Image (cartoon, rainbow, N blue to C red; front, side):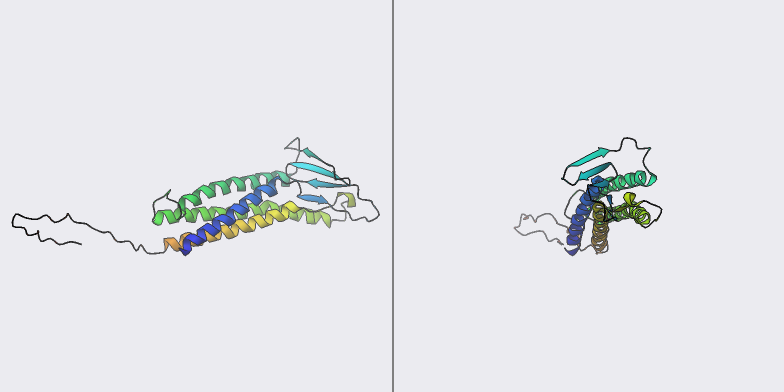
Length: 218
């Protein structure tokens, strides 16, 4: 019962991490304009993401523009696109694998094979969390390095956006959830099989003398 609870809890955390990863991938707030010159009146804020750039006016009006050319993008944006989308798709595959091997489903017959399937799903979720960390940490490192670079003008400096923090939280949920699924599946795989085969014999039939056949029953 404890192993099944761990699997369910881990699956819930993985689902939350998967949704957070999709949200972080779609949000345009990977880079946010940093205002370091206090003499300048803030008129607009620029957001940069993986798919579009948005400009938010001081009046609240927002205008977004999707990137027109993929090849014109920087290498970190292209890599972040590929890795985040790949991690989201892999998490979807891990969801089906985990559901097939979970103890609360009957897709796979109970036994060591079912536990191995669930263990594979948990390992895939852990790999998804690590895969999602790569572009987020890489992107954050570039933003921080350019922020402290004195050769970059103040008007071109950016800060870490909300999408990066959501991505870090999603990666942590995927790692923790995948670990819980693996622990639950491992506990189920290491548990001895306590079921014993039961053999039933044919019912006793009365003989002509009225007595019953003497047979051994298990």
